[in-house]
Image 1 (tube, rainbow, N blue to C red):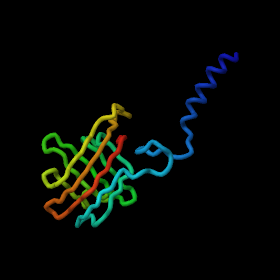
Image 2 (cartoon, rainbow, N blue to C red):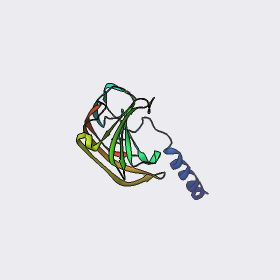
Image 3 (cartoon, rainbow, N blue to C red):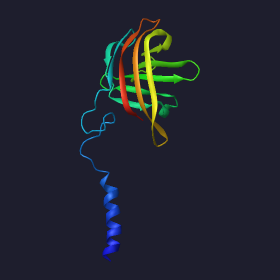
Image 4 (cartoon, rainbow, N blue to C red):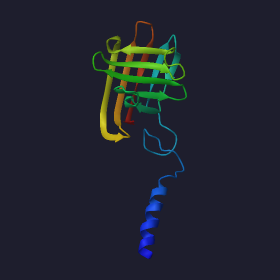
Length: 158
């Protein structure tokens, strides 16, 4: 009887134990507390204005069927998206999360003095979404007069 109770109670306790937490875990650092900045970008754009983008989260492009990732600054409501196109190569698209098509700027590698990126798998896959290590460094000016300078890095972009 005691043995049966052990095999019933322990799995129940273990399965419910992971459901409770006191503070959120920051996906960038893996520690509890406030999200950490992943870097920053200084953006000057006619459509987006002058803004410092300080992303705190990264979402893998797999979620929207592209190779790359979104570095999001929730406070500024701006996303810096790295897209690696198999035909045209890498590009960065910066856009307002509330108006992604009306307020956007695109920077292609030939328009940049510096366009360094790395997008490496960590080997983890979560619900069919690949987890990446992502770094992005930009110093670009496009033909529309938009410019961006900065860098960001994250060890878990999923």
